[in-house]
Image (cartoon, rainbow, N blue to C red):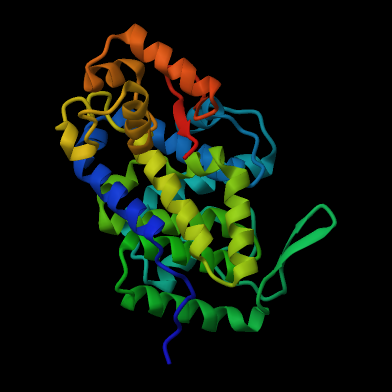
Length: 329
């Protein structure tokens, strides 16, 4: 009987899928792809984010310098991690998600200067340890090839939305932990690849950077899925991160130029309620965009935002220019 990863498609997951699909529909890939500089910036954010989760301390500025061929001071391992990630993400569009050979080739590129067995499944037992506590013991090494073959077969035949199947794959991959090192960055890379097969927009989005911004929740979602023996908590987390990534990378005028009823119907709502509804749909909205959509002046919007913040209903994450809102629903 074919392997079926355990997960449940909840109403919250369906709502997130609908929201993400709507955001993707409003965002044309050409908006991001038309700017080589924007593509480069997002690729730098992606590489910085996915490596920072693993403890790499090199900054966006340093990774930019490496991409530009400039010398950068850093440990041999950290520099090798960056160079491996650069070539792996450059090759991403050439791979297919359901190919074991491509998966091994990707790991070979990502880890070539770090591991002697890069591009090969592990032959030893591994686990995830934080401090003195063991958080996860991966399946025995002799089971890895069979488990990965079953997972790839499931991915090939899965009928669920790619947003869901990519998240399930990501969790199952981390559970199997098929390589001696580099499993986290490979799981994130492969989810991006699966998503890009659904929509090429994901080749230009810094999803891994937003995962880094929510790193603690990322680990908590993995642990919750482990405890339940069910990937549903992780699927929900990843979909929320994808929605946040899309919101943060929407063009400044994406919401204002869209019909209000096509996103959120705020007609007849009080100012505070309208703000909450709009920020829940797009946390990256600016004060000016809120004012334009709701039809109020900036001072009114500013006062309403201040009251919502004081009440703990919304929270500002990051700067006014590049940050986003977090809605406490």
